[in-house]
Structures are given as structure tokens and as C-alpha cells.
Image (cartoon, rainbow, N blue to C red; front, side, top):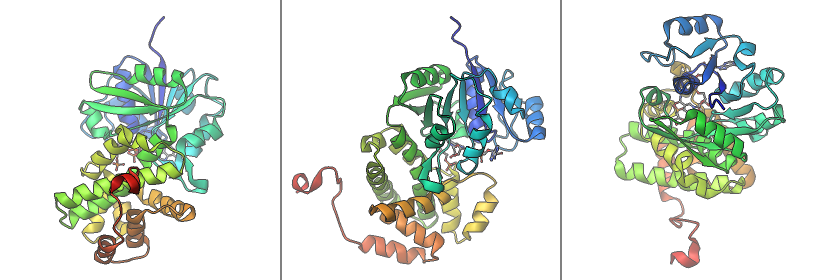
Length: 342
Ligand SMILES: NC(=O)C1=CN([C@@H]2O[C@H](COP(=O)(O)OP(=O)(O)OC[C@H]3O[C@@H](n4cnc5c(N)ncnc54)[C@H](O)[C@@H]3O)[C@@H](O)[C@H]2O)C=CC1
Ligand SMILES: O=C(CO)COP(=O)(O)O
């Protein structure tokens, strides 16, 4: 049996383009769908996505189109690489176009505001007949297209999804691990964006390595605590989609969320920073949603609360930092608990 399949990637931004290119290089018939016809034509003829990944040559066999029906008809595997604010709208458009047995995988790292809905829950709601999954990990699009050795995670309840995604994406430079904790993997990808903003801000303010290490570690503690209450497995946060992506995004200015934080730390106003970015930084909206949810569920998230009060309540960063440092001192690793920790 021919192991080559037909794949569609929806969303012609940085990540959609990078992932579609890997799959086409692997020899699968691959369509990259972008909504703007002129952009699609220009990328198809120049073999470059000059807006999102300038300077990177896309492989000849990748077919770039603005025709959604052409992109998904006959497709075995679909990646939805659309930012969270438009994810449902695009998913809805493909409902009647997909083959009944097509697998659908989200690559978005955000949360829908209404009802705190994760992207894979949108897939469940909009495409209930399909096997679904989530792809997440420390994966800068620019490094993927530059063939840097990269690892990622496919999360799903279905063996069929693991098997298909691992076989389709695997290459000499791209490695795919499996995880059955879909919610944990997805929350890891969304939550780390908040902490990337904090770490960018800290860097702009001259934070040293002690501060960076404390921030990263306490961020991980907060993420695991929140996800645990949401029903995820805190152990997922020891994997690539948890601590892996947290380290990546919190330590590099290739991250848009980190860059948002850096500019805020330099004193620029939030609306200017966000409108000047020209690309999606999911962390700003995720912060609003996580703060609300944490308050509703009574989850202790001092870093989330601190960033929220700087961004949306106009509190001075220095005051918030002082308060965080002088707050109640607690246990290092809360899973060890008081009785073992003493
Ligand atoms: N860039 C990266 O390194 C990574 C990004 N991600 C996640 O993937 C998702 C997409 O991110 P990027 O590709 O980086 O974003 P981007 O900002 O580079 O591109 C977003 C793309 O979505 C398209 N889009 C937006 N609304 C649309 C709509 N209603 N209909 C059709 N297309 C629409 C835009 O035209 C653009 O092509 C985000 O949730 C992000 O967090 C995940 C892993 C890595
Ligand atoms: O998720 C990412 C890398 O894994 C990309 O992060 P940014 O969205 O902050 O650029």
C-alpha cells in the first residue's frame, strides 16, 4: 500500500506554511490554503511566503491555493493553523467539504473567549464525526523551515491520529512524540504565551539569570496547578508541550509574545505594541481568559494576576513586582506536599 497521503493545511501564516512545507518535502500531496487569492497566487509562483517567512524557499511540490474546496477535497489529514479568534469560523467552512474519515488536527495555541473553549473542543463541536488531535511543542516556524532539529507532540485519544501524524510529519529534522492528554498538551501551548510576555518584560527591565530561572520555574508551577484543576495531567507539563515550549518561548525574541512583553517593559502602550506586531500574539487574549477562569475556580496564579493588573488595570510594574516578592512564602514543589517537604 502507498504510504503517501493527501494533506491540507488551513492558514497561510508562519506556522501553517512551515508545517505544510515539511509535509510536502516528505512526499505527500499537500495543499496550503490561504484566504487571500492574490497572496496565494504570489506565494505559489514565487515559492516564498514573503509576508510571514521571507527568505525561505518553499518546496516545488507544495500547492498553495485560496480555493478551500480544492484544498480539502479528498484530503486524509487536515491541519487547522488559524489563530484562535477565527478558528471556529474556518472550521465551520470545511464541515461539508471533508471526507468522512478525514483526521483534523489543531495547531493553534489559544482559547476561545466564550465558555473558555479549547481549539480541539471547537473541532469536537463543529466536526463531531471526525477523529481529532492537537499538535503543540517548542516549534518556532522560522527554525522549522531553516531545518533546525525540532521535536513536537501530537495529542489525541486515537491511535489512528498518532500513527497518521507521526508518519506524515517525521523527517530527519522533525520528530513527533505522542501524548494521550489532549487537554494538558493544548493548555501547555496556550498558557506559556502568558509567561513569555512576563519574561520578555523582565528582560527589558534588565532581569538577570536568577530572576529568569525563578520566573520560568514558578510559571511552570502555575501552569501545572491551573491545568490540574481543569482536569489535565500535571505530568504533561514535564514534556515538550509543557516545559519545552515554556523554555523556548520565554527565552527568545523569535517569540512574538516575548517581543510584546519586551516592548511593554520598555514602556510602550499595549495597543501600539499589538497593532505594530503584524502577526498574532495569542498571550494577550489568553491572559484575560485565564485570569477570569482562575478567579472563578479559585486557582492561585500570582503571575497571571500580576501581569493582568499591569496590562489591564494600569498598575506600575515595579509595584506589582514588589508585591509578588513580598507575598506569602510557600512550598517549592507543591506535589511533594507539606508532610514530605519538611
Ligand atoms: N509561528 C509559530 O512559530 C507557531 C505558531 N503557532 C500557533 O499557530 C497559530 C497560527 O499562528 P501563526 O501561523 O504563527 O500566525 P500568523 O500571524 O503568522 O498567521 C495567521 C494566519 O491566519 C490567517 N487568518 C487569520 N484569520 C483568518 C480567517 N478568518 N480566515 C482565514 N485565514 C485567517 C492570516 O491571514 C494568516 O495567514 C497560532 O495560534 C499560534 O499560536 C504554533 C506553533 C508555532
Ligand atoms: O508557540 C510558539 C513556538 O512554540 C511561537 O510563539 P509565539 O506565538 O510567541 O511567536
